[in-house]
Length: 92
Image 1: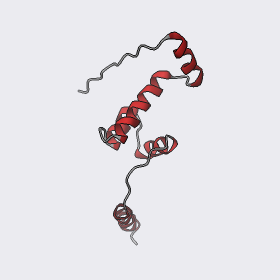
Image 2: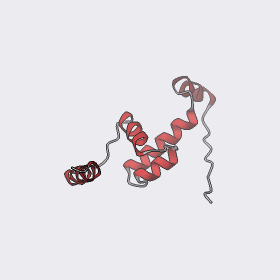
Image 3: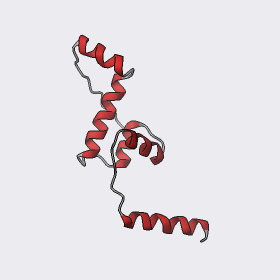
C-alpha cells in the first residue's frame, strides 16, 4: 500500500493571484517544479518522477522533460543498446 503525503504552501493572496493568472493549476505547477528540481539534483530517478507526476509511460515523461528544458543522460552506449534491442525485435 502506498501512502501519500500532502504538502501545504502558504502564499500571500496577492502573489497567489499573480501566479494563478499565469498557471491555472498552481498545485500542479508546484509539484512539477519539485519533481524537476529533485531530478536535476539526483534525488529522484526518471521512474520516480514519472510516478510522482502520474505519467503512465516514459514517453509522456520525455515530452514533459523536454518542454521543461530538462535533459537526461543518454550515452552512445545507451543508443547502441537500444539499436540492438530494436534490431532483435524486428528480426534484423
